[in-house]
Image (cartoon, rainbow, N blue to C red; front, side, top):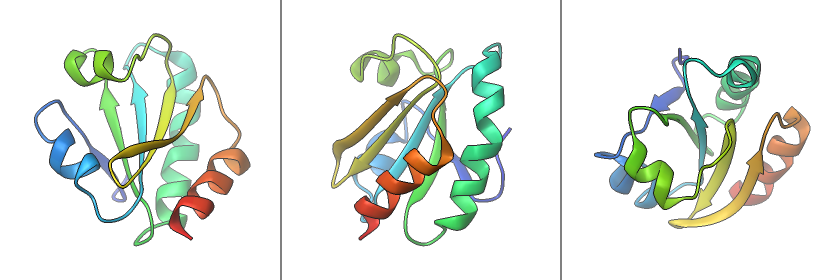
Length: 110
């Protein structure tokens, strides 16, 4: 599922790993059965490698982590949310172009 640079975020670790992070965090809300999520996955992996050390990247399985998915109003997947300082800095719903995500990540990391 995830590459070496992509973490797994859950209801249990979201507070520490994402909201408490000292670097921006890109979170991919996905599910195993979601075909667009599978299409987006290589892009997320590439971005995680390119931004390693600058932006933390991880995934939330919406089927297994309903609490955090509901908290952020995830009604369609894939949804990618960029957090900075524990706050939502950007939200992308559906298949999103790599350059759009990269631009948001560059701005957040800057």
